[in-house]
Image (cartoon, rainbow, N blue to C red; front, top):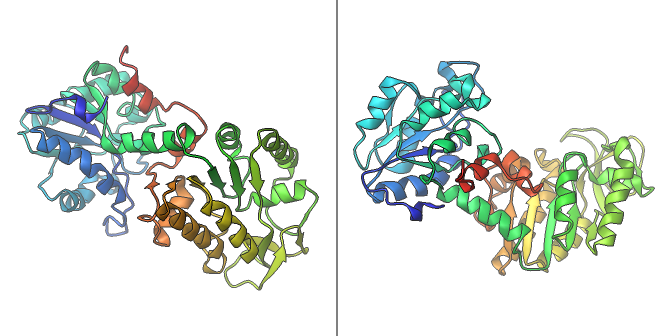
Length: 397
């Protein structure tokens, strides 16, 4: 069910948004991406003659805590939406219900932080029922929390049988993941980076049946290289996962998936941007040195594979990009993906660190889609049905 399936004229849309945005010490929003992402759904409802009641969490408060109040973001929300936003300092109770009932078409009401009540994270049904009294139609547009079975993301949907739908953002996320996992044009390439094989194993298991090429980078490279008998010096290795790395290689081979590992690395004698650096073959790193980025030959090799791909998934950086001296590999992959996208490929970037990298290096508008969900994206790639999505699809509850 989507927004198009409902007539919002004179209706109140109760929208679960993800306004969990970063604030600085002066309580100013430092990255409003998530607010911008929610805008199309809100505007759509308003232009259809409806009103919007927005509910969200912010941070991880322990009970009611002024520093986590959503009042801090009102100015930014008004700025993004281009209209006045009403605010009430609670999210349930008679005063909130009165404020919601008195909303006129075209108006927006922002509720206080849902997580001021522990019942939100507990998925408490009474709390969900109190929230449900505030609107006529429930819209879930919060992909970032769709993997949580919380009161406002999943349980609440029980009270909106036949009156619930996905917002535009959540729909885009679902469509983008499906494009990679189900209907992607071949060849399909997945680029997995990050520190540990153990954190990506369920993703690898799920995607091997669907992809043609698997590019591996980041710290987990060295577990694969050591498993193959290479010397990795002091690089990060999960010694208890060496057999797992071998199993993945064998599994990929049996499914005709080509695994591409780095062939060279930028190595350092310390985990520091100021460390002494050198370039080394990936399997000949001397003792006392560690690989912190892919080398120039790997950049060329990976870029060539990406240039021939029609569908690309990028999850995880190729090096310690937070340190400028070890960011080149991640930037090179960003350029390769943006060039492939320009030439007609579909590219999806998802998972916290790779999203941070594309924003930092200016690739966010040069790829097809940048996911707004970290954990939610990872669980989707693992093949899990997210509670927030299941709650909309299953209308028999």
